[in-house]
Structure formats: C-alpha cells, structure tokens
Image: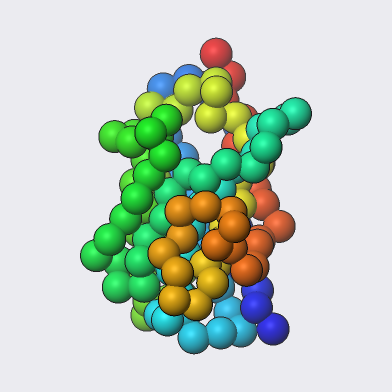
Length: 124
C-alpha cells in the first residue's frame, strides 16, 4: 500500500524559509519520479517541482524557480522541498505526489498517488 506522508508546513512571514518533507513507503521508491504540488483556496491544484528517480533531473514551475529546491534521498525514501524567500502567494496546501511508472512528473495527469497535504501559510 502506497503511503506518502508530508511534514514541515507552518505559518511564516514573507521572506522566511520552510523545508517540507515527504516520507514514502509501500513501494520501491527509487523506481519512481516524485514531486510536489500545491492548491490554494479557490484554485486548481498546480505543479510545483519534480525530481527524477535518480535525482539528477529536476523541474520547477516558473513561479518558484530560483526560490524552491526539490531533493530526494533514495536511501531514506524521502523527498524534500526547500522553500526560500516565501511570498504570500505561496500560501497553499502542499501535496507530495508519486509519478506513474515510466513518466517524469511535471503535471497532475502523471500522478498516481497523493499524500494528505501539509498547510503552508505565508503572512505579509
């Protein structure tokens, strides 16, 4: 049974940093691309960042490039999202996602498992 458990969300002021983590279990982690999505109130869920199985390839939404960094540790079955220079518009529920086998994850259509989400709130 696939499980994705996020942690690290919280309430911070604009300009601050947060580090999200996602602990994965129930599957061979190193075989799958992983990523982060977010959903703000009243908006569609959107792609934030993706990392290939080998961690050598990453991709980001334009809105977070240069501020967010995705990483993974295949030995610990975890991925992280380091978020720097946070802005109020980054406020959302952040979801960890597993990509479909054989696909690089950069769209919700390529997701086959979701975590429960963790709330990130950035005050101005």
